[in-house]
Length: 204
Image (cartoon, rainbow, N blue to C red; front, side, top):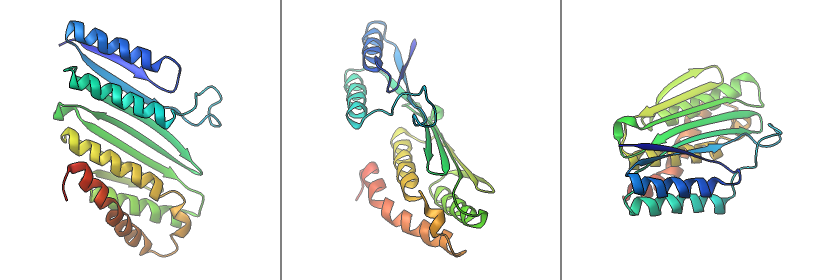
């Protein structure tokens, strides 16, 4: 089957490019591969466009959903780079109907505090990722998590988990005063995210 690659970003013209790709895919029975790109904030890169507004993101999701309902095969790749205060986050994700192709990469680095507190936060993140089926590597204040070959619904749930994790761990190193805090905060996060993941899986 033919494949069409279309990139979307906050730049002008993202919607028209995707619309044309979907229209062409219907005619030639091709699969559309959508690349979602989230650039660094403008203050970090003068030439970078602003991040897409929530309304734009919803519009893109609705376009993809409608195309899928009309029988167009769509697979999505996301590249998200975040600089939140004093740490950096990278998320690369490819999610589609072919389980063997699905993959998710997460990287977290840095912080504002001394090394011991940053290391505790990294251990907390590593604990959460390992208990969520990720393969984890930790080097100092860097943690990397990888997961692949899970079905589409599971991969989307893992992305939700990472979204929650990014928000939960921002400036968390400041609160990491004791060695046991890595475990305590991991338990707190997993308890809080559980209802969100159950909703993703459609369970109660």
